[in-house]
Length: 325
Image (cartoon, rainbow, N blue to C red; front, side, top):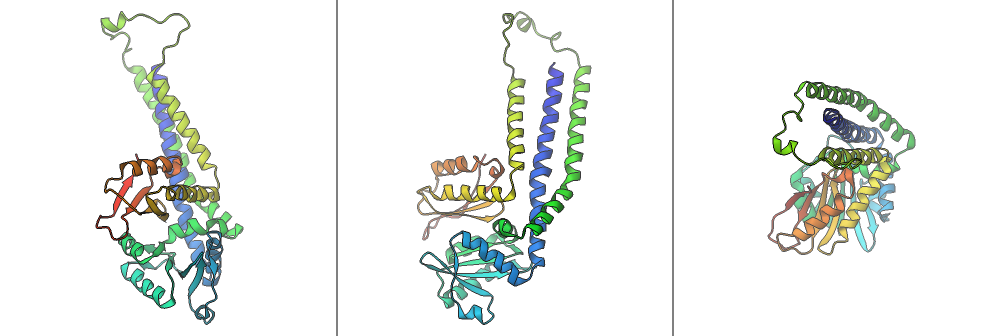
């Protein structure tokens, strides 16, 4: 009996790992890559229209701007009582660095904007975060930009991206599933050839009292299988969610974290990186970190999010990074 339980546990673990890696992680990465390519294939005007539609959902509105009307690519937006400068660099070859952020910050001052949104389909260097935060600039690279605009893409383009992403990962899912089943069968065959553990039991174990008839003694294997089943079922349910719902869950998680009193802002600066700006800190923030991790781990697909903690303005403390267990 123990051989079959061990074999099932190995097979389930392999299936779970395969499903998460290829069915969730790799498929999401493939969809992001293909989505960025689809955005890059659009004209700049069509791309900025999708971006503005997504930002409108976040409370931004287009501001009358003579510079934009005369052909400029920088747009002024209203957000509450603030004027926000938007720049959208349409192309995958862009690589934003500290110089790009400083140049954009100067443009903000010249245009009278209090904040800025710097968007690109390319990449952004990890070293720009501190400069961006101090300058009031929010940077979106290709990955984070696709997550934001995905629900507003034309349905035909979105369906094509989804189909191509599924085709890319289908082979890996089947290969991993077959390998997991073979591994489980191999464990069962190997364990069956070993001597029965009951015959090698010590006298103390042999003399242990037997449970009464009809009473089932809980076993550690049962608890492990139950946990594996529960995790697999939860990941299976998450995989069924449409990308728009996954994006909504990401936004909801950031919004919940932003309500913590010690936190000023919380926003996704990359696909798996949450940028949190503190308004006060004791330099340790154990309770704060525990609360952020509690909120993050409510969403299984966000469990491995890297949290970037920016110190309060004027503080000499360094930027800190946390990964929830």
